Structure formats: C-alpha cells, structure tokens
Image (cartoon, rainbow, N blue to C red; front, side):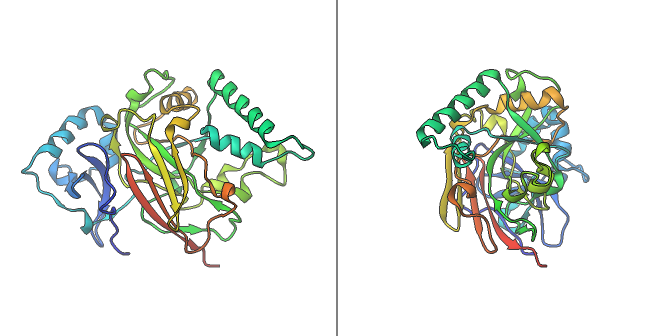
Length: 332
C-alpha cells in the first residue's frame, strides 16, 4: 500500500497534534506532528516502546505538559510527514454518535420526508420542523446511539462500498476524543473530559436505516452505519486547548471537487459539551472514546446524489485539517 500523508495545504490549530503513522512495511506508532509537516516518534522520544495514542489518552493530564515541551524543543529529532502513512489517529473502545443535531439539516429532512396525504405548503412544514427543534433544545434531549470501532479507517484510505448498500451517503462531523473517564457529568464540566478533536465522516447507507420487515422496531444502525471503513477518521487529534471554541467551526465536504456540505457548528442544536454530557448519563465514557457530534445539511439524500464507485470525498474542518477518501465498489 502506498504511503499517504496530509495535503500540504491543510493545517491544524495549535503547536502540535497527535497522529498514528507508519513507515512503509513498518508498524504503526504514535507521533507528535507539528504544523510545518514534521513528526516525532513518541516511542523513542518518551522511551516507551509499547506506547500508543490510546495509552497517551489514558494518562492525558500527565502527558500533556510533556507533549507541549516536545513540540517546543528544537533539539528533538523529527522526520518529514510525507515519508509516512497516516492511519486513524486512535483505536477507540467505544463510539458514540449524535444524530439530528444540525438545525437546517433536520428541517430539510423533515420537509423531504412528506407524510402520505400531507399537502401543506413547504413553508408551513418548515415552521413545524423548526418548532420541533426548538422544543428538543429546550428539553435538552440530544439523540445519541452506538457505533462500532471496527468501522473506523484512516483519513486517506479507500472506502469500500458494500454490494448490499443501495444508498451510501456521507456525513461530515466533528468528533470529540475523550481524555478522562466520564460518567454522569454535567454540561458545564463535560469539556474537562475532552482531550481533543478530530474529523469523522460517518457514512450511512440510507437504504437500510429503517427496517422494512418490521417498521415497529425502527432504525437499524448496525446495518446502515457499521460496514468496515464506514468511519474515515483523522488525520490527527488536535488538543482541546488549541481549539477552545468549537461553536463556530466550518465543516466542508466536496464530492469530486463540488461542494456538498459547507456549514458552521453554529447550526448545532446541542453543542459539544451537551452531547458529551448526555452520552455520559447512560454510559461510562473511556479515554480514547469518540463522541461524534452530528452532520450538517448537504448530505447525498438532499442532493439526490449518493456515493458510487470512483467518487472522491475531500473533507475539512476548521483547525482540524483535512481528509481525502476514494470510494471503491466491493467486488462481488
């Protein structure tokens, strides 16, 4: 497999980020990346041969000062990022996914899925959807479900579209990476448990979201969202201290060069802190876990154009860099 690295034009916020890299035919290793495209192998820099990004996150509060010092140390040995392959930055144990969390996106979906016999004008149905969103926000009820770590792949890896996936779609998202175990934390303290942020493209097969054989049981997230490689992640984890305000980040996804998603996190119904806090009310969040925060308007269903063999997705988020993935049809 060829070595792939971050396009030179895409930068991240702050003095450093964490990545998982490998040399050709070599094992993956945790790396500190600086904005000038240089990397430090943290196994040797910290004299810990078995180190991983996950183990760094498990002791994040103690590791962070040392990582800051390494980033600022001009004497530390560094190599060119272009010489390495970039993998997903972390192998999470748990993945929490937030749905219906961007106001305009949810309103568009509400309008698009007109109930049989509903002949009301579009502006009336949009007003109804807006009222529903306002009520959800007031009642503090995010919508969170579970994804599988096995769906995670690298930020430049090919995405295999399963033969059974009739309507594969994209969903660009900001992902919070947990740095401390969190259980039943409040929204006011939730960000204290976030180590950093990365990019996730939460692919979904729209054809299998709802169970046709038994509509009463509702959505089938296992089938529709968890095929191998359906969550391109990365390229890096940018520490939360380098991105203290996540309320106005720009998410942009281009399909074959054409902009499909271009929205700010201002349109979120529930901000990062509220989503993390909500997930922690039911589950114990662990270091390295991902909390995906929802996708804005502009998915394939909106455009009437789903993913197919040969498509290239370029995704970027303010301060977090960019990823590029190519779609490949599964061989029968």
